[in-house]
Amino acid sequence: MDSFFNPVLFLKKKNSAADSESEIIPKRLIFSFALLSLLIIARAFSSVFCYVILAVGGLLLVFFTLEESFSVLVFLLPFSMVLKLSEDAMSFFTFLFFGLFLRIFLFNNRFDIVSFIAFVLFGGYSLVFSGLGQLTTIITILAGLILVKQMDRCSFRAQTVVVSFSLGLCVSSVVALFREHLPLIDRFLMTAMLKVGENEYADRFAGLEGNPNYYTVGVIFAVACLAVLILNDKPRVHFYFLIGVLTVFGMMSVSKSFLLSYAVLLALWFVLTVKRGSASNAVKFVFAAAALAGVVAIFAPDSIQLFLFRFTKDSKGTLNSISTGRYGIWQTYLNEIFHSRRILFFGNGLNSISSLGRGTHNTYFEAIYSLGLVGSGLLIFALKKVFEGIPKSSLLLIPVAVIVVRMLGIGILTYDNFWIYLIMLKILGLSIKKPLATIKGG
Image (cartoon, rainbow, N blue to C red; front, top):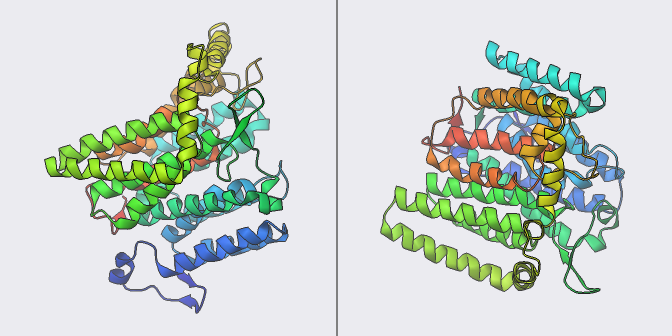
């Protein structure tokens, strides 16, 4: 099952270990990414290409190694919102995700008894208190937890996975720039607007996600992972290039929470740079940060102006206005949580919303409102088990911190992408203090 699939020679034996380790992205992966990108553009003019993408993706998952299969999956992740036949249909990406899950689970499905119990308890609890209507969500969460755990038994290169995901974000963002000319893609995406005058609105960029906040969660996570690769190994020019491109796209979202999490990322990156190096490294970091600011100023000047507008034109200055209405939403959810013992202890069910009719905009409140203290405790216990064995390192503070900060302003508990991010975090964690060329778990 782990033989390579070469698009030119069809089936081919594995290259030598030395050859594979010298390439961050093997040529066959680059070819696959180019092919999939062309098919996605073609999909913008005919839905038939959705089936072609599914077929090609399925073949790659079968004939590629696990590392390459997962790299294909994370490359396609930013396109998932447009890989479907109708607005309310399931994304074809989901089929590929569960295809990879089955491949890993069927051939490498051993768990320690405590982890198995944790999965069963959380799954059973969620099913009882959320109902059969949330079965798909429960299965997705369990599949995500199981895959995170299974990373202990897989052999992945963190560089390959992180760069593949970053490339997917960059390519999908470029496609999104031309969405108006791609009819069958544009219809799947909402347009996020920012009011800048009495009857004036400015567009907020959101990639192919449609929502600036969800879009920038992936962007900031990719930048954080690239920062870890730079600190943990020899810095490569294309890592900085990807960070620059992703930062520009992230700034174009005009997301306050993105800017806040980016500030946290830079602060941690600077501290760890000084801690792991010398004063000269700190000077290099400052110059690199200044260069990054220059790139943003050149390629996203309008976004800078919109950020200034958002921060300076808030005449009210209240917690609710500063948080763009989130504070009032949080108050509503907290009131419902603490006025109902059932919700406080057992939750109101996954994907449920308050009487306000809006989501929590906070993952921590979402967990309590959906699962209660009991269910949240079971989820934390399951997460603790799946992340066991990762070497303790301050480097992981960067991606963990940005995710923790972003979860303050957005609810991502049932967001499918979140579980892919956790799998990537596990792969990255296993790479710490080990050669990044080959990372072997377990």
